[in-house]
Image (cartoon, rainbow, N blue to C red; front, side, top):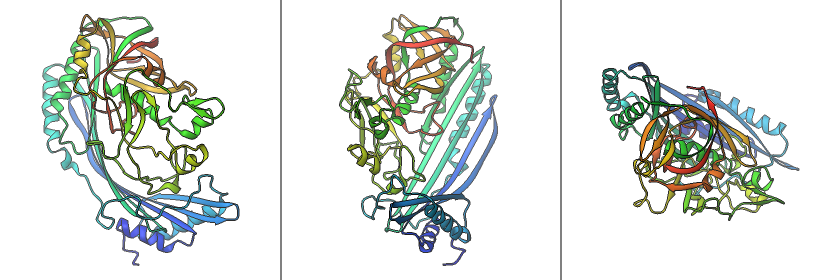
Length: 466
């Protein structure tokens, strides 16, 4: 094969052809990114970038088991493939048996896109409608004495997966996010959204939400630390539920290291976490939140195994009607724990069954006697894995609701809460909608959550953060 053959599928085939190991898996990620940034009602930067990463996973059988070696490099050309293959093989020979070793998967279990087609690409054209709407938002903000800050990003990643066992799979993943921050009169407010192609982003609606929050901020209210009934909109709920989902490792639970553990190697599977019929689920085919329908693992770790590359991902209910029903497990950890294989999925939905009857956030506010409205949480860190106690700060909008109306902006707090305990204290669940987690949006942007009402949310101290 000519060293000029730089198409992604050709790089995969070249690496597999060069392999002298007992097994080989190759991943090529082709990525284009378009972005806009703005500050003080004016665009500051825009551009498009391209990237390529080639990952070679070599496996070597030995008397004590199968070892693996993983080597990845950016911007690889056909002429550089052999160097990577040899490096991966050397790494595998120097490594001991891989704990997560499993037979590489044969073709047929999963299906992917056109393996030989060029990678999908994005461009600055993805913002052709969004950018003028953003310009109109700048004008409205200037007229209102506000300053808008933020950024928009659109990525298209085409991943090509091939193996010495005959796998040939390809997945195209669009990922778009927009974040808007408005400042005026000593107040700031944030909102964001996620999208596949920016055709469904309503800038005026986002700005209207910011206007409303800045108007609420004209009255400042000082409140002490304490436990408050709290309304939490979808974006902040997503930040809590994403972290919960990241701690659903079956192995960690069986080994007694997580909130989902029980003594003597048991888990909390089958236990009720909420008295409400809440379901937390993932589905690669979820409309608007579509993601890879098979495992794409560039390294082995707590949540994935390179030996599972190409494993089909099916819809999974992590919590069903308030009951814990699934924990994440690779093929290896499923064998260790006796639990079903459950790969993590790159989207997450929290909902109640009766979506038609679920209230909106506005209806929940109207039905509130006195509560906090917590729009953003930030700087989330884990305090205690045994209870999944998290700490973090409020930011860009905590408000007081009295007698069905928002009456003013409250000082910021540090909070200490466990999302698992919180599930048990939710007293009302609203209508699920697509949202962007503020804290984790760079890593996990495909979420749909409802607003919720929680009793005794623990604002542990007043924060001077702004």
